[in-house]
Length: 253
Image (cartoon, rainbow, N blue to C red; front, side, top):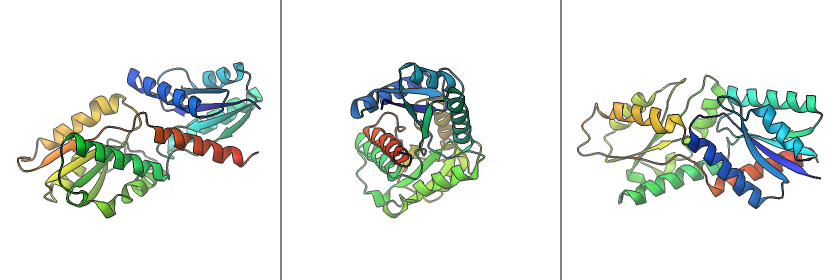
């Protein structure tokens, strides 16, 4: 049976985000036996979900495994699942929809990797238990998204001096509040982790702007502040996608 794997991302106008998805799909293709691997977008820019499914069908596949490529089980995820199910039903093509990325130990591992890289890059000599961590999520009006995010953040707490979270938008506390909380804890080294998949507009502009704006309110003479990279393209994400796909397919085979 010829199977396709289709990643559904939220969508971004920034070319880097699309390039990262393309690289990820190439890595997945190299590590799997899928006849066709591609990505599409829920909104913002094409190819949209319908076009993504049509391209899979045009490659003569018997079934499509769809991965909602989201960190959170929020409204965007629900929208992508509904649209996918409806389109595949109309096209009379077999579809399997996986779980999103949330609630997996890989996400904790990726955060730790980004922290480790930032420490090495900036020659941070302090041990983890003397570093304070601020994890910035996007934010959602859906409470299940917050719950999933906080679940991952809490796994970091045993190993660092303090671990705090905040959001860019749509939920509280915001970035300014998160930075205020962590600075009030009198840290010596703060490591800020943007919990984002892609180098989209939020990473390139919004998050950086809000961080810098908030930090201007404090005397940082004795405080080192470092910002990690986003998740981007990573073999661990490839493995997570393939694990989710295998798990979903195993339930219907």
